[in-house]
Image (tube, rainbow, N blue to C red):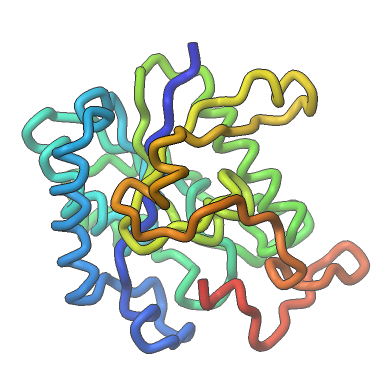
Length: 247
């Protein structure tokens, strides 16, 4: 049986505060650090957290910090393994959504094993048509499917994932996530048989509440025309101001 997924958005980071997309791989803000404390308190009171057997986290700084601070009780107290993964990084290729070299991340977060992170990370530009991390509709949707496929056969009962609003909404869950809020999903086998794609179905509890902490927008949010740059002859023409970064 495939695992249940506990999907978490990172807490507020500095680029969210200033709407400054030029900040490279920014850390959490002071409010973001407080949101991590709120996240931890919320999950400590949720039965789903007791069943987490693995934590997968985007290899970006703000997600690693969110996992470190917000899931501390699972990592330290219960010795749950943390698996940094390039696949769960954010969509856009602006500095704020582009990661830092793993050589640097491994020094900042020496408690985690980065050896399985794709060596291509954090490159989002070279060989654009074939780069799985490119900021194109095709690449992002394919990356979402690849991430779900990798988790589908995991042996753990529950896998927690710390990722990003844009990627979670467009490529994974079709839901909006407020900073540091969480939602719970199962693999939807019926729709998967119909579509031959990996599809998730949200638990009624978090769907009706608007996230585990009730801070997220309720309802399904489908793909929007502004989510991706226009495709030009198979490549990406990145517009100067794209709403996807603001999310």
